[in-house]
Image (cartoon, rainbow, N blue to C red; front, side):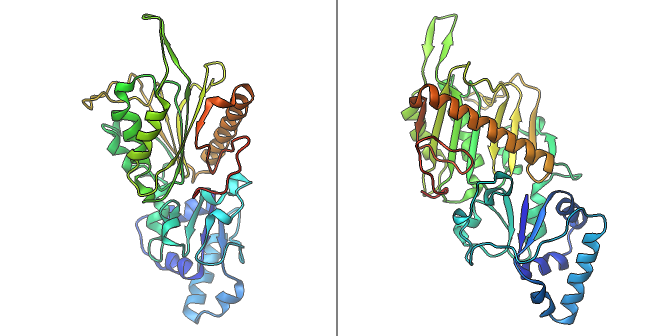
Length: 336
Protein backbone atom coordinates (compact mmCIF):
# COMPACT_ATOMS: atom_id res chain seq x y z
CA UNK A 1 0.00 0.00 0.00
CA UNK A 2 0.95 3.64 -0.33
CA UNK A 3 0.87 6.07 2.58
CA UNK A 4 0.96 9.77 1.68
CA UNK A 5 2.29 12.31 4.20
CA UNK A 6 2.52 16.05 3.81
CA UNK A 7 4.99 17.99 5.98
CA UNK A 8 2.70 18.99 8.88
CA UNK A 9 1.35 15.44 9.10
CA UNK A 10 4.73 13.71 9.11
CA UNK A 11 5.90 16.08 11.87
CA UNK A 12 2.71 15.35 13.80
CA UNK A 13 3.32 11.62 13.30
CA UNK A 14 6.92 11.95 14.52
CA UNK A 15 5.96 13.97 17.60
CA UNK A 16 2.94 11.93 18.64
CA UNK A 17 3.03 9.70 21.68
CA UNK A 18 0.95 6.55 21.34
CA UNK A 19 0.93 3.02 22.79
CA UNK A 20 1.12 1.86 19.18
CA UNK A 21 4.08 3.98 18.10
CA UNK A 22 6.40 1.05 17.44
CA UNK A 23 3.71 -1.04 15.75
CA UNK A 24 2.76 1.76 13.35
CA UNK A 25 6.37 2.35 12.45
CA UNK A 26 6.97 -1.35 11.96
CA UNK A 27 3.87 -1.66 9.77
CA UNK A 28 4.96 1.21 7.54
CA UNK A 29 8.53 -0.06 7.25
CA UNK A 30 7.56 -3.63 6.40
CA UNK A 31 4.53 -3.11 4.19
CA UNK A 32 4.10 0.45 2.86
CA UNK A 33 5.55 2.80 0.32
CA UNK A 34 5.85 6.05 2.27
CA UNK A 35 5.31 8.93 -0.16
CA UNK A 36 6.17 12.45 0.99
CA UNK A 37 4.39 15.30 -0.74
CA UNK A 38 7.20 17.76 0.02
CA UNK A 39 10.83 18.21 -0.99
CA UNK A 40 14.11 17.98 0.88
CA UNK A 41 14.33 21.75 0.55
CA UNK A 42 11.09 22.06 2.51
CA UNK A 43 12.72 20.14 5.35
CA UNK A 44 15.72 22.46 5.29
CA UNK A 45 13.34 25.42 5.66
CA UNK A 46 12.08 24.10 9.01
CA UNK A 47 13.43 25.46 12.26
CA UNK A 48 16.42 23.66 13.74
CA UNK A 49 14.46 21.57 16.23
CA UNK A 50 11.99 20.23 13.65
CA UNK A 51 14.80 19.55 11.21
CA UNK A 52 16.58 17.51 13.88
CA UNK A 53 13.40 15.60 14.73
CA UNK A 54 12.77 14.76 11.09
CA UNK A 55 16.37 13.70 10.45
CA UNK A 56 16.39 11.55 13.59
CA UNK A 57 13.18 9.84 12.44
CA UNK A 58 14.60 9.32 8.94
CA UNK A 59 17.80 7.81 10.35
CA UNK A 60 15.79 5.43 12.50
CA UNK A 61 13.65 4.53 9.50
CA UNK A 62 16.69 3.56 7.44
CA UNK A 63 17.82 1.08 10.08
CA UNK A 64 16.45 -2.29 9.09
CA UNK A 65 14.09 -0.95 6.42
CA UNK A 66 14.09 -2.31 2.88
CA UNK A 67 12.84 0.96 1.43
CA UNK A 68 13.12 4.66 2.09
CA UNK A 69 10.49 7.42 1.97
CA UNK A 70 10.14 9.11 -1.41
CA UNK A 71 10.14 12.91 -1.71
CA UNK A 72 8.27 15.12 -4.20
CA UNK A 73 5.47 12.68 -4.84
CA UNK A 74 3.08 13.79 -7.53
CA UNK A 75 -0.49 14.00 -6.30
CA UNK A 76 -3.28 16.39 -7.27
CA UNK A 77 -3.38 19.96 -6.05
CA UNK A 78 -5.15 20.45 -2.72
CA UNK A 79 -7.90 19.70 -2.00
CA UNK A 80 -7.00 16.31 -3.41
CA UNK A 81 -9.45 14.81 -5.89
CA UNK A 82 -8.73 11.12 -5.81
CA UNK A 83 -11.02 10.20 -8.67
CA UNK A 84 -8.70 12.05 -11.06
CA UNK A 85 -5.79 9.75 -10.19
CA UNK A 86 -5.07 6.81 -12.46
CA UNK A 87 -6.01 3.47 -10.92
CA UNK A 88 -4.76 1.30 -13.77
CA UNK A 89 -2.11 -0.27 -11.55
CA UNK A 90 -4.26 -1.75 -8.83
CA UNK A 91 -1.43 -2.24 -6.32
CA UNK A 92 -0.77 1.52 -6.26
CA UNK A 93 -4.40 2.49 -6.71
CA UNK A 94 -5.51 5.65 -4.88
CA UNK A 95 -8.36 3.53 -3.59
CA UNK A 96 -5.88 1.26 -1.79
CA UNK A 97 -3.82 4.03 -0.14
CA UNK A 98 -3.73 5.79 3.22
CA UNK A 99 -3.65 9.59 3.35
CA UNK A 100 -2.02 11.60 6.12
CA UNK A 101 -2.51 14.88 4.33
CA UNK A 102 -5.28 17.42 3.69
CA UNK A 103 -8.18 16.10 1.63
CA UNK A 104 -11.60 17.44 0.92
CA UNK A 105 -14.10 16.35 3.59
CA UNK A 106 -16.30 14.38 1.25
CA UNK A 107 -13.49 12.23 -0.10
CA UNK A 108 -11.99 11.71 3.34
CA UNK A 109 -15.02 9.72 4.45
CA UNK A 110 -14.53 6.97 1.87
CA UNK A 111 -10.77 6.55 2.18
CA UNK A 112 -8.41 6.12 5.12
CA UNK A 113 -7.62 9.73 5.96
CA UNK A 114 -5.89 11.20 9.01
CA UNK A 115 -5.81 14.87 9.88
CA UNK A 116 -2.95 16.28 11.99
CA UNK A 117 -2.78 14.40 15.27
CA UNK A 118 -4.78 11.42 14.00
CA UNK A 119 -2.05 9.68 12.03
CA UNK A 120 -1.21 6.83 14.37
CA UNK A 121 -4.78 6.29 15.51
CA UNK A 122 -5.99 5.94 11.93
CA UNK A 123 -3.05 3.87 10.72
CA UNK A 124 -3.34 1.51 13.68
CA UNK A 125 -6.93 0.74 12.61
CA UNK A 126 -5.31 -1.40 9.91
CA UNK A 127 -4.13 -4.02 12.40
CA UNK A 128 -5.63 -5.76 15.39
CA UNK A 129 -4.21 -6.18 18.88
CA UNK A 130 -0.87 -8.01 19.08
CA UNK A 131 0.00 -6.60 15.63
CA UNK A 132 -2.23 -9.02 13.72
CA UNK A 133 -3.27 -8.47 10.10
CA UNK A 134 -5.19 -11.74 9.73
CA UNK A 135 -7.45 -13.10 12.43
CA UNK A 136 -10.38 -15.46 12.88
CA UNK A 137 -13.14 -13.25 14.36
CA UNK A 138 -15.92 -15.86 14.19
CA UNK A 139 -16.70 -15.71 17.91
CA UNK A 140 -16.51 -11.90 17.92
CA UNK A 141 -19.50 -11.65 15.56
CA UNK A 142 -22.63 -12.32 17.61
CA UNK A 143 -24.61 -9.83 15.52
CA UNK A 144 -23.63 -8.01 12.35
CA UNK A 145 -23.20 -4.76 14.28
CA UNK A 146 -20.12 -6.35 15.90
CA UNK A 147 -18.41 -6.11 12.52
CA UNK A 148 -18.14 -2.34 13.10
CA UNK A 149 -15.07 -3.07 15.23
CA UNK A 150 -13.22 -4.36 12.16
CA UNK A 151 -14.38 -2.22 9.22
CA UNK A 152 -12.80 0.83 7.57
CA UNK A 153 -14.10 3.52 5.21
CA UNK A 154 -14.64 2.29 1.67
CA UNK A 155 -15.55 3.37 -1.82
CA UNK A 156 -16.43 -0.18 -2.88
CA UNK A 157 -17.97 -3.35 -1.49
CA UNK A 158 -17.68 -6.59 -3.47
CA UNK A 159 -19.55 -9.64 -2.17
CA UNK A 160 -19.12 -13.17 -3.52
CA UNK A 161 -21.55 -15.75 -2.18
CA UNK A 162 -23.39 -18.21 -4.41
CA UNK A 163 -26.31 -18.56 -2.02
CA UNK A 164 -26.58 -15.13 -0.36
CA UNK A 165 -29.87 -14.53 -2.22
CA UNK A 166 -31.29 -18.05 -2.05
CA UNK A 167 -33.60 -17.36 0.95
CA UNK A 168 -35.60 -14.10 0.86
CA UNK A 169 -36.59 -14.46 4.53
CA UNK A 170 -32.91 -13.97 5.43
CA UNK A 171 -32.23 -10.81 3.39
CA UNK A 172 -33.13 -8.32 6.13
CA UNK A 173 -31.12 -10.03 8.87
CA UNK A 174 -28.06 -10.65 6.71
CA UNK A 175 -27.43 -9.05 3.31
CA UNK A 176 -29.13 -5.70 3.98
CA UNK A 177 -27.81 -5.47 7.53
CA UNK A 178 -24.32 -6.49 6.46
CA UNK A 179 -24.16 -3.90 3.68
CA UNK A 180 -25.40 -1.16 6.00
CA UNK A 181 -22.59 -1.97 8.46
CA UNK A 182 -19.89 -2.12 5.78
CA UNK A 183 -20.99 1.23 4.32
CA UNK A 184 -21.53 3.00 7.65
CA UNK A 185 -18.07 4.61 7.79
CA UNK A 186 -18.36 6.15 4.32
CA UNK A 187 -20.68 8.99 5.31
CA UNK A 188 -23.19 10.19 2.74
CA UNK A 189 -20.95 9.43 -0.22
CA UNK A 190 -21.95 7.28 -3.15
CA UNK A 191 -20.23 3.92 -3.04
CA UNK A 192 -20.18 0.97 -5.42
CA UNK A 193 -21.58 -2.43 -4.47
CA UNK A 194 -21.06 -5.49 -6.66
CA UNK A 195 -22.58 -8.85 -5.74
CA UNK A 196 -21.54 -12.11 -7.42
CA UNK A 197 -24.16 -14.81 -6.93
CA UNK A 198 -26.16 -17.53 -8.69
CA UNK A 199 -28.79 -16.42 -11.19
CA UNK A 200 -31.24 -18.96 -9.75
CA UNK A 201 -31.48 -21.77 -7.24
CA UNK A 202 -33.08 -25.15 -7.86
CA UNK A 203 -34.66 -27.02 -4.95
CA UNK A 204 -34.45 -30.75 -5.65
CA UNK A 205 -37.01 -31.56 -2.97
CA UNK A 206 -39.75 -29.36 -4.38
CA UNK A 207 -38.60 -29.28 -8.02
CA UNK A 208 -38.94 -25.49 -7.89
CA UNK A 209 -36.48 -23.03 -9.35
CA UNK A 210 -36.19 -19.80 -7.39
CA UNK A 211 -35.13 -16.59 -9.14
CA UNK A 212 -34.33 -13.59 -6.92
CA UNK A 213 -36.35 -10.42 -7.47
CA UNK A 214 -33.45 -8.27 -8.67
CA UNK A 215 -35.46 -5.04 -8.85
CA UNK A 216 -36.70 -5.33 -5.28
CA UNK A 217 -33.29 -6.33 -3.92
CA UNK A 218 -31.66 -3.45 -5.79
CA UNK A 219 -34.12 -0.95 -4.30
CA UNK A 220 -33.70 -2.25 -0.75
CA UNK A 221 -29.91 -2.30 -0.93
CA UNK A 222 -29.90 1.32 -2.08
CA UNK A 223 -32.11 2.25 0.87
CA UNK A 224 -30.25 0.26 3.53
CA UNK A 225 -27.00 2.24 3.20
CA UNK A 226 -28.68 5.22 4.83
CA UNK A 227 -26.63 7.96 3.18
CA UNK A 228 -27.89 10.86 1.11
CA UNK A 229 -26.28 9.41 -2.03
CA UNK A 230 -27.73 6.05 -3.01
CA UNK A 231 -25.04 3.49 -3.91
CA UNK A 232 -24.40 2.04 -7.31
CA UNK A 233 -25.45 -1.63 -7.18
CA UNK A 234 -24.49 -4.34 -9.65
CA UNK A 235 -25.40 -8.02 -9.70
CA UNK A 236 -23.12 -10.41 -11.56
CA UNK A 237 -25.35 -13.46 -11.85
CA UNK A 238 -24.20 -16.78 -13.20
CA UNK A 239 -24.67 -20.52 -13.24
CA UNK A 240 -22.60 -22.72 -10.94
CA UNK A 241 -20.47 -23.53 -13.95
CA UNK A 242 -19.59 -19.89 -14.57
CA UNK A 243 -19.32 -18.90 -10.89
CA UNK A 244 -17.01 -21.54 -9.50
CA UNK A 245 -15.78 -19.31 -6.65
CA UNK A 246 -16.56 -21.48 -3.64
CA UNK A 247 -15.21 -19.18 -0.94
CA UNK A 248 -17.58 -16.60 0.50
CA UNK A 249 -15.73 -13.30 0.33
CA UNK A 250 -16.34 -9.61 1.05
CA UNK A 251 -13.83 -7.17 -0.40
CA UNK A 252 -13.58 -3.54 0.71
CA UNK A 253 -10.76 -1.05 0.09
CA UNK A 254 -8.75 -1.86 3.22
CA UNK A 255 -10.27 -5.04 4.60
CA UNK A 256 -11.28 -8.41 3.18
CA UNK A 257 -13.55 -10.84 5.04
CA UNK A 258 -13.92 -14.53 4.24
CA UNK A 259 -16.45 -16.96 5.64
CA UNK A 260 -16.74 -20.69 5.61
CA UNK A 261 -20.19 -21.74 4.47
CA UNK A 262 -22.23 -18.56 4.02
CA UNK A 263 -22.86 -14.94 4.94
CA UNK A 264 -26.41 -15.86 5.96
CA UNK A 265 -25.36 -16.02 9.61
CA UNK A 266 -28.57 -15.07 11.40
CA UNK A 267 -32.29 -15.81 11.14
CA UNK A 268 -34.99 -13.15 11.39
CA UNK A 269 -34.83 -13.32 15.21
CA UNK A 270 -31.08 -12.71 15.28
CA UNK A 271 -30.23 -16.29 16.18
CA UNK A 272 -27.02 -17.68 14.72
CA UNK A 273 -27.81 -20.28 12.05
CA UNK A 274 -24.46 -20.71 10.30
CA UNK A 275 -22.80 -24.12 10.35
CA UNK A 276 -19.42 -22.54 9.62
CA UNK A 277 -16.40 -22.50 11.89
CA UNK A 278 -14.47 -19.48 10.63
CA UNK A 279 -14.88 -15.83 9.76
CA UNK A 280 -11.52 -14.36 8.81
CA UNK A 281 -10.42 -10.74 8.80
CA UNK A 282 -7.61 -9.75 6.42
CA UNK A 283 -6.08 -6.27 6.38
CA UNK A 284 -4.67 -4.88 3.13
CA UNK A 285 -1.91 -3.25 5.20
CA UNK A 286 0.08 -6.49 5.05
CA UNK A 287 1.77 -7.08 1.71
CA UNK A 288 0.77 -10.73 1.48
CA UNK A 289 -2.87 -9.90 2.18
CA UNK A 290 -2.87 -7.11 -0.38
CA UNK A 291 -1.45 -9.48 -2.99
CA UNK A 292 -4.28 -11.92 -2.28
CA UNK A 293 -6.84 -9.13 -2.53
CA UNK A 294 -5.44 -8.08 -5.90
CA UNK A 295 -5.59 -11.71 -7.06
CA UNK A 296 -9.20 -11.87 -5.90
CA UNK A 297 -10.05 -8.79 -7.99
CA UNK A 298 -8.29 -10.33 -10.99
CA UNK A 299 -10.27 -13.55 -10.61
CA UNK A 300 -13.56 -11.69 -10.31
CA UNK A 301 -12.73 -9.68 -13.40
CA UNK A 302 -12.33 -12.96 -15.27
CA UNK A 303 -15.77 -14.02 -14.07
CA UNK A 304 -17.28 -10.77 -15.34
CA UNK A 305 -15.59 -11.18 -18.72
CA UNK A 306 -16.73 -14.79 -18.99
CA UNK A 307 -20.32 -14.05 -17.97
CA UNK A 308 -20.52 -11.12 -20.37
CA UNK A 309 -19.20 -13.22 -23.25
CA UNK A 310 -21.92 -15.82 -22.64
CA UNK A 311 -24.87 -13.58 -21.81
CA UNK A 312 -24.36 -9.88 -21.09
CA UNK A 313 -27.89 -9.65 -19.63
CA UNK A 314 -26.68 -11.64 -16.61
CA UNK A 315 -24.87 -8.50 -15.41
CA UNK A 316 -27.62 -6.37 -13.95
CA UNK A 317 -28.08 -2.70 -12.96
CA UNK A 318 -25.43 0.05 -12.58
CA UNK A 319 -22.18 -1.69 -13.63
CA UNK A 320 -19.87 0.67 -11.75
CA UNK A 321 -16.78 -0.11 -9.69
CA UNK A 322 -13.38 1.38 -8.92
CA UNK A 323 -11.79 -2.08 -9.01
CA UNK A 324 -13.72 -4.00 -11.66
CA UNK A 325 -14.51 -3.03 -15.23
CA UNK A 326 -17.64 -3.92 -17.12
CA UNK A 327 -17.50 -4.43 -20.89
CA UNK A 328 -19.18 -1.72 -22.96
CA UNK A 329 -19.30 0.63 -19.96
CA UNK A 330 -17.21 3.79 -19.69
CA UNK A 331 -16.43 4.40 -15.99
CA UNK A 332 -15.09 7.57 -14.43
CA UNK A 333 -14.39 7.04 -10.75
CA UNK A 334 -16.84 6.33 -7.98
CA UNK A 335 -18.88 9.50 -7.84
CA UNK A 336 -21.07 9.18 -10.92
